[in-house]
Length: 278
Image (cartoon, rainbow, N blue to C red):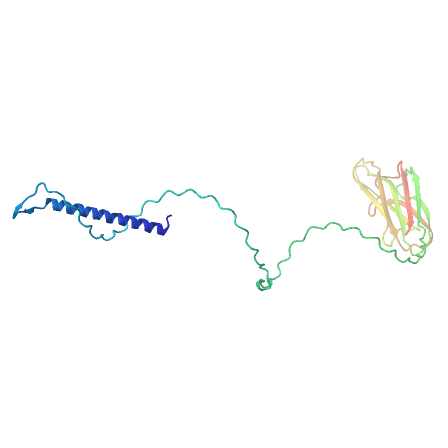
């Protein structure tokens, strides 16, 4: 865009040109008027058809300046100038963190999530050796009192009564007595009926009462089933005095049943009775 001063200069120039044009037109009009007007020649009026033009008169005063003309069309934009060089860096400003510009301390924010586990630190130096402790008293552990009785191929067809009897030397009155059986047992039911047998231990002629008998039983009603199955059962009994202890492994009818069926004990294998004082 043109500067305001440049626009005023152009308007002034146009005004002067219009004033000059008005002056020329006015002079030409006067000349034409004089040439066409009738003249007085020696006391009579005669029309001069071949009048000569006189000398131009003195220019009249300048007319009033005409009004501004309409704004001309915008000119074509000029070619951009060459970019100037970078200016010199300005001086360093003062730090904004002065005591007078600090705001009030804000409230404590919420706790962030736990960070990742750090790496193991460098292993520390060995600590000083501690004071030597006193020697421990020698522990005297009682010898384990346990005995196993074993038989190969008992093959007992006995239906009731004692199958095996053993003697165990119990050393203390207040200890428990553990008895266990390992071996196979079998029961074939009576034809078209059932069979039931019970195997159990007696200690010094009676079954354990404290806390309960040590036994196992088989009830079978599948006709023709002659399976010899491995069996293990055991239990603890208290209240047995020290000394020689008589233990029997016995077979008999189930409680509430008769002697139907065919029983077998320890067929073609090793059978064991294990006794231990605890």
